[in-house]
Image 1 (tube, rainbow, N blue to C red):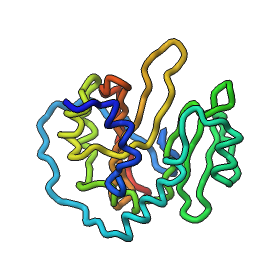
Image 2 (image 1 turned 180 degrees about the vertical axis):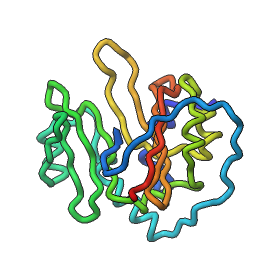
Image 3 (image 1 turned 45 degrees about the vertical axis):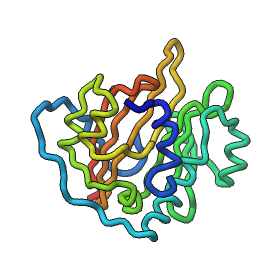
Length: 208
């Protein structure tokens, strides 16, 4: 089996381009265990270079941010004002495409956790998936499932959409991998690192 830690590090850089939770106006539905065998999708998403370039631009803020990056350095790099949320996290958005990154700063005022902020239906991100995804696939994610089984069910590696440092008293990081559809719906599977075992999942319906 391939090193999962190595795969996780490469996910953001490789995507398939060159390589919330999630914010937005959709309502997330937490996935539950469903062991029933469900046929895998056979319809592929057509990807053209323009869509791929748009997806890469949409991911720009998220991919630029590293954990432990000092706040002053992050804000100088992103060059946009942050919007403080009710929970204390700070959202930074690209004024051109509306995509951004939600940051949780630690006590040292450095990045503790980051999360991709989609924009509306986020159709560009569908260019990152070789297959459309369904809520049924998200429901098949059982706690403790290894990453290679996630790949089998979802049809691809997914796109890193969140990453956090370990909480106090824990050695486990949590990362979120996303699969996006053209209608704005998406699935997210959360894995602990470095083991790469499922800790949860959800399917978010597209905007109405």
